[in-house]
Amino acid sequence: MIKIFFKKYKRFVIYVAIALFLFLLPVLYSFVPLKDAPRTFYISSSGIDNVRKSLNETGYAVTWVDRLMMQVIEVPRKGWYSVEEDDYNRLDFFKNLYRHKAKTMDVVVYAGETAEELTSRLANDMKLDQKKLLSYYKKETFFKEADIFADRYTLARKANENATMSYLFDVSRRTLVGYAVEHFKEEPELSELKILLTMASIIQKESNDVKEMSLISSVIHNRLEKGMKLQMDSTLNYGKYSHTIVTPERIKTDNSHYNTYKHKGLPRQPLSTVTLDAFNAAKYPAKNDYLFFMLSKTGGHNFSATYAEHLDNIKTFRVHQKKKKEARLKEQKKLQEQEKKKQLIKQVPLKEKKQLKEASEANTTIALEQKSK
Image (tube, rainbow, N blue to C red; front, side, top):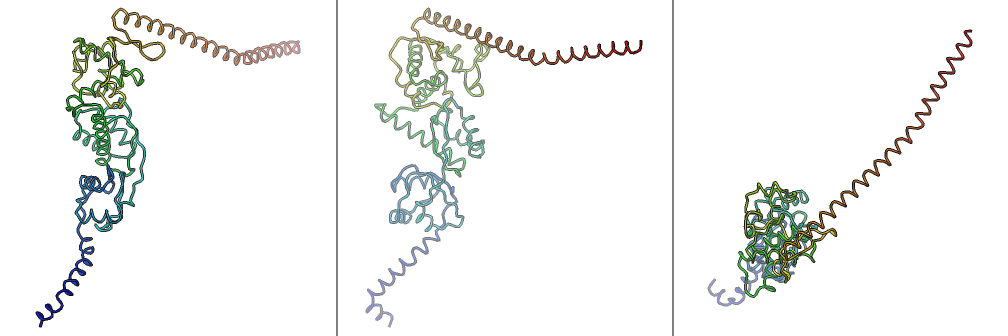
């Protein structure tokens, strides 16, 4: 009987089976568990393939059904997303993902920051764990310092330590790759990038003036080509000494590879974060024969090709410093004299009161003496 029914209604049974499968598929699909991945994450690029890659890297295993779901409804665009519902099933997650844009905040990475300083400030600004941020940095770094470019970044307010650092590394590496494609004939080796970042970090420590960067770069390149020691104070602004004044005593006692007064060549690694401008200056030094530079009275630097010229620049700057110091002392003396005059003016009424009181007491004494007589 069943065989006869199936034979007679074979096509109908197949259609019913297909309809039942299609009906149950979303139900069964919704019960496929999502992995315990971060609720706040960044999709680094638009397009279904890039979205799938970003989600997989975040910890969400994207199936062909998930992909189809996003394509049919709407593919999420590049940006930060936050899914807060703990009981979100798979169907709802991928169906509504494009709607869950995260609230963001701007964070600035300053030029000249070490990894320690950067992670400490991020932890304070975003209420995160600095040890976890630094641990992630050390795990991902290629150069120990300068992996993250100094710039303004947009971060999700609820991003955790891994999501925050992953985003900063990802954006910086994309910037570096984009620069390499445009400015290198062949893909650069990490060692070449490390050298340029080390130069850039020295340039950055010496000046934030973009106009001067290529000139400072030329001094570095010219001295290295001649086999001269760099003899730059900035190379001693590493690690915990990142923002300390370099003294003659430091130069004498610091025996690290950062001390370019004692060792030839570049330090073994970058000093701190750099801007893309500084990196570009390291790649493209100005064409000149400069070997020295010295602070000028305008706040910039004077550059020279000979040591004699350099000595003249040093003398000029020291004369300027001396005049500036004398003017400052003169101004301080003037202010002190003005303050002294103010105090004297305040004291005059007191003296007058004292004199009147003494005169009054004297008159009272004379009157009493006369009365007694």
